Amino acid sequence: MTLRLVDKWDKVFKKSDKVNHKKVSFKNHFGIEIAADLYIPKEKSKKLPAIAISGPYGAVKEQSSGLYAQTLAERGFLTLAFDPSFTGESGGETRYMTSPDLNVEDFQASVDYLSNLEEVDPTKIAIIGICGWGGMALQTACLETRIKAVIASTMYDMTRVAGNGYFDADNNKEARKNTRIAINNQRTEDYKNGEYKLAGGVVDPVPDTAPQFLRDYHAYYKTPRGYHERSLNSNGGWVAQTNGSLLNNRILYYANEIDIPTLIIHGEKAHSRYNSETAFDMITGETKTEDAVPKPYTGVYPVGSTKIDNKELYIVEGASHVDLYDNLSKIPFERIESFLNESFEN
Image: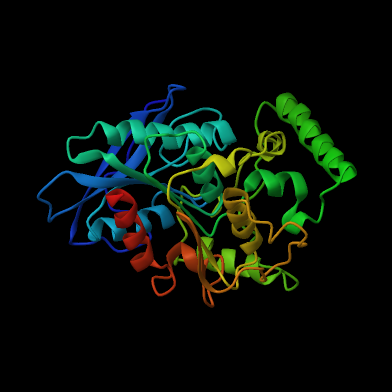
C-alpha cells in the first residue's frame, strides 16, 4: 500500500520549539513500509546518538512513543518514533495484525535506517519499547548486535499474557486449549465473512466493576489526554484472531544472553509490575520471582534502583502502568538520559 503521511501536527502532546520534526519512512525486510517521526535537536554540532522507540502495544507514534522521542531529542538525542507494521500510518495488509517476529523486525529495520543517517553516529544507537513493546525491545536485544543499550518502560510480555492470561491466572492446558479453539473458530468465521473481526479497543464506557488498571487505560486512550484516531486501543483494537501468533510464541528465551546495558522501568503501583520483575530475573539470572504468584500492584523488588552488573531495574515510586505513558513527573527521563549517555560512553 502507498503510504499517506499526515502533514499536520496531530500528536496528543505539544510540539517542542527545541526540536526539528519530520515524517520519514523505510522498509523492513518483509517489504513493509514503516512510517515514523524523526526528531532532531536544533542545537547540534556533531553526529548524534540515536534512539528508536515504539509502543505502547496498540498505540501509535502520535501518543507515548512520540512523547518519549521528542523529550529525549530535547536532551540531545536524535530519535525515531515509528508505527509498527499493519498499524498507524505504516503499511502492511491485513491491517491490525501482530507477530513477535515482525515486531522485532520493525525494530531492526529502524536500526537499519538510523545506521545510515548522515546525522547519526552508528556506534551509538539504542532502542526503547513501551508497554508490550518493552518486551519486544528486550527480545530485539537478544538478536540485534548493533544497538548499545535497550530500555523497556512499563513493559508487558505479550506472549506471556496471551499464553497465561493476566497475572498467570489461566496458566494451564485447558485454558490454553479453550483460547486456541476460540481463535481458530474465529478464523473460520472471518474467512466465511470475508473480513476480519476486531477484538475491540479499550472498553467504553467503563463498567462499574472494572479494575483500576482498565480505568487508567480509559483515562488515557478514550479521553483528550491520549485519544488518537489511528490508535487501535482508542478505537476498534487488534484483529481478534491475531492473538494466536502471540500464543504460539514465547519471547525472551535467550534473555540471559543480553550483554548490553539494559534498563527496565516500571511503576510501583502498576498492575503489570510482575512482567518487568520477571524479565529482570531472566536477564540477570536472579530467582526472586521464581516462586511468586503474580499479583496486581505488588512486586518483589524495592522501589528505586536495583543494579546487577550493567542491568538495572528501576521501580518508580507511586507510579501506575499508564503514568509511564505520559506523566512527565513520573517518567524518569533524568535516569533514562544518564543511562543512555553512560551506555554510549562505554
